[in-house]
Length: 135
Image (cartoon, rainbow, N blue to C red; front, side, top):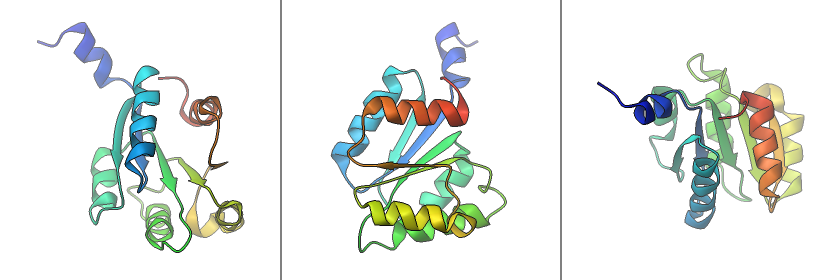
């Protein structure tokens, strides 16, 4: 038998954050947990796609970094695979030109929202709620 708290947590919306910086991952985890979302965080590890496909989160937050191909490759695969193509994606970066590229090539990479870092936490919450609703 599950308690009300466990049952409530099982029905919470799930945010999956991929970023290479542990500080950013920690901040996102605290933010979304305080708003009552379930949260998974990871850096770019070889099994990121498999984790996403298995967990089927409600939304992804993927960071694009200058000189790093991993984010682009992951975006392209997520957008191209039937198992993950319907998951909304928020693309974040400290580089406006990378966000512009992602937005201009949305047919290739997907993406539903684009935020330049640093951003206000309220802007991230607004983007999440616009895509999947409140926790």
